[in-house]
Amino acid sequence: MQLELEQASYGFDENGEARLFVFGTLRNPAVRMLVTGSRITGRPGALSGYRRAGLDIVEDESASVSGLVLTVNERQLRRLDRYERLGQRYRRFVVTLEDGGRAWVYQRIRPEPDGGPPGQQGSVEPTTPESRGNE
View 1 (cartoon, rainbow, N blue to C red):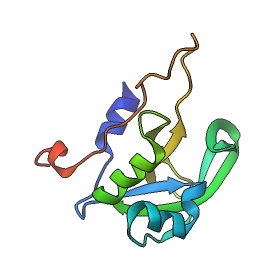
View 2 (view 1 turned 90 degrees about the vertical axis):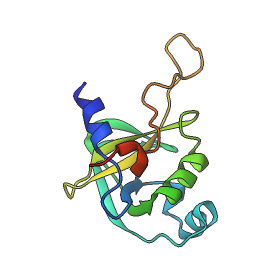
View 3 (view 1 turned 45 degrees about the vertical axis):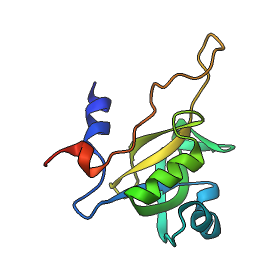
């Protein structure tokens, strides 16, 4: 329940921007440009408690993942979600980075234990200013 509340409370700031931590292909500025149609610069960041596992991150208390922290607007995040196949291949959730800031991150959706297709649990609908109401 606490995680659900935390997820619901994180989203776009008053400037219509959100932070996204990337650790793989999206570190490449050319890929970001192709996916979003805009130049998004990032700054170095790190995520403790996870390690890289191929194209994914998995929990590991003794590890840390290096990457970039991007500041994106709603349109850019929507395009990145589509690229990552949000809800089908990846889920997006909020993490606290080593600098204490919060950001979204993508993680592979695991198959269900019964071998069936992955469920929608953990996938996140993109947050829009309209969906947040008048805050």
